[in-house]
Figure 1 (tube, one colour):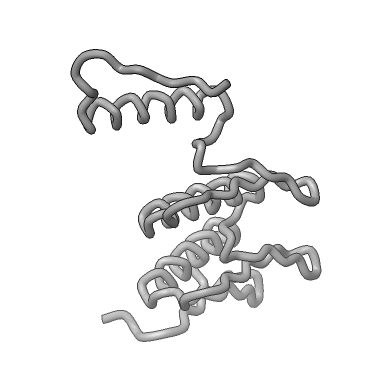
Figure 2: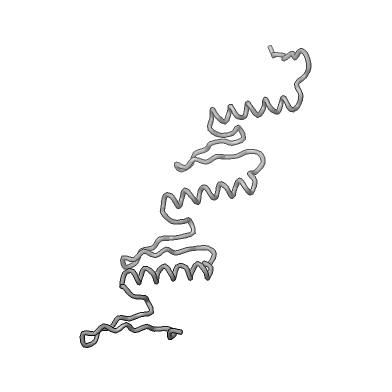
Length: 145
C-alpha cells in the first residue's frame, strides 16, 4: 500500500521550501560532519571528501590551499616551497618556485652581515690582523667619502 500526502490550505511558496531544504541540509551536515553533496571516503589511511554537484569556486580552492600550506608549515617548520637540507652539519633551506626579489636578497645579506658582525666583532668588509703585538683593522671596499 502506498502512502499519499494530502496538503490542506495554501501551498508553501518556493522560498519557504528552499528555507526548509536549507534547514534539512544544515541538520545533515551537523549529524554527519559533511554536506549531503559530499561523501567521506578513506583510502590508504587518508580520508577524502568526495563532492558531488557543482565544483568548488576558485576562491574556495585558494582558501583550502592556503589552509593546507599553513598546516604543512606548522608541522614541518618551513613552507611547502622550501626544502631543508643538511650538509656538513649546516642546514640549508632550498626554495622552489619563483626567484626571490632583489630587495629580499639584499635584506637577507644585511641580516647575514649583522650576524657576522655579532659573532666576530667586526664587519665582513674588515679584517683584523695582528703584527708585532699591534692589531690592525683592514677595511676593504670603497674608501670613506
